[in-house]
Length: 173
Image (cartoon, rainbow, N blue to C red):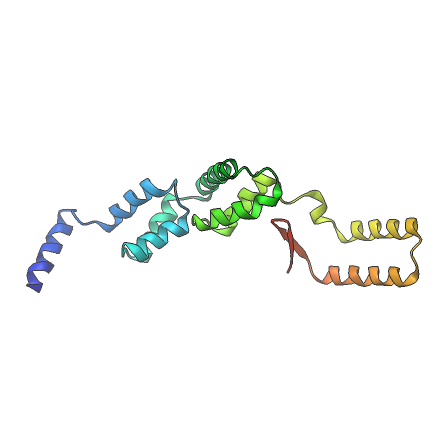
């Protein structure tokens, strides 16, 4: 029986009845607007049993970053409209939704930047700008020396850790 099954499978492959590459392309055609590359790869490899290298190669050839950004932007806009999100406070929900749809964080960051203008001018002040603004604040308020020293210590700590803002929260690097 085993030989007969193998013979039947070989014959089906020979006549292109069984073709994993074509299956991946077809699956991608029908699902690339519904999911990101990571979720498509997961479904094909773990749920459908297709070879991971084959899936990765076909996804790399057929899904470029521009298409994924466009698709993720459409999904994000639809989600914002459905959930009636009107400001940046709901941005984390949108990002989580996109991640659950299988988009990479790199794509999500680009979409969120475009959609919500997450990174503002104030978020990326240089060290000299920070010193200038703190000196102006100190001279205007007439703070005592202890407060000035603590402000200087905070500035020194800020110089050693470069904060990155994502979805309204600062993360030190």
